[in-house]
Length: 276
Image 1: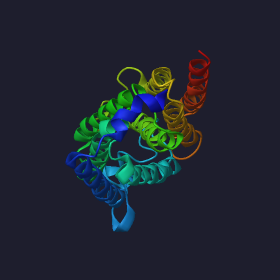
Image 2: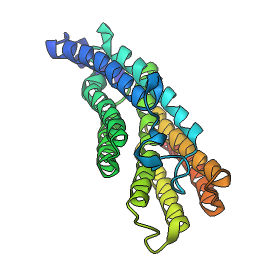
Image 3: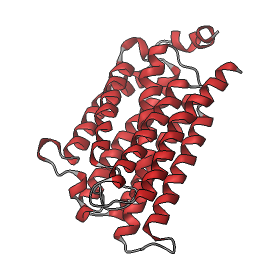
Image 4: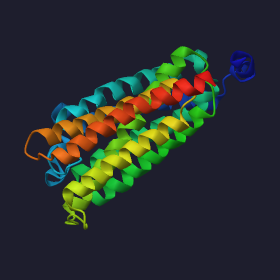
């Protein structure tokens, strides 16, 4: 049924716009990934945790993930590179889902590189605006993927899976970025104290993971990717609070529970969606 519905669009001859999109997205992805890698500490760059006076380090706030959490970027960048190559293949030039999302994927990579540049400059308030814009762009991609059906299992893994991991991680990173910016600005505990606000933000992350799981339930790779990345980030928040310079066992246990919610929610929603 899916093949029949998609075949008229797929069989259409590629336009010049399709070819331009394929080349620009491929080249742009390499440039954006290289810039982001340099800004994150590779090739002689300065690691993010050492920028902005250490405001984004692993012990700056109760909701800062421990350093190993950021290894997920290697997986995300690999997925984005594979996706860029996949969309550039001649036979994929007219795929509707790639037409609908490729430019947005490139925009997300540019915004990610821009975020690193902004924090390198020490502009934490601006970094919140940039990462919020990045999350909005990823949300647009998620909506477009949910509203369409993958052409194949490979497309589901390469496109939906990569976007899922990317979106899940940025969802956690956005909350951590907001907390770091408020702390750096001297906002203090805002009536709840560091532990109270840490717990609130972790609960918000758990609620967001459930919302993502519910919305993406019919796109298994997308839902599981988001859940896995959010569970990963929340688990490393827990690790960072159980040990290290900033121990906070209350936030740590909230993060453990939130990580479990993020992991289980997409499993439950996708099973229910595919049984229905």
